[in-house]
Image (tube, rainbow, N blue to C red; front, side):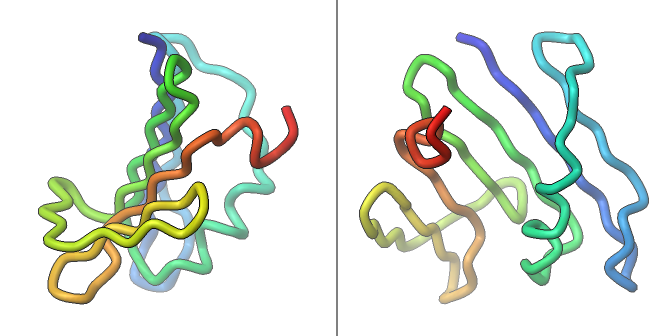
Length: 99
């Protein structure tokens, strides 16, 4: 199973202070356009994993998520802990962006 891992760490003022992207131990090209979307969430840390075999993208806002509720809307599964969103799973991720 191939996994892509993106970790963004922001300062309290919402500025990117560290950006790490790995793919099987190798650094890959990174599209900075993703940053504007991630900054819309009010979280300081993000963990993004992609499972190529199942074409699922996992976005976590805390580790571990410890979700106690999940809501599925189309290809999106929103994960909550005490009514706070702690993660999103995107099914058929490549299909969502027409790759």
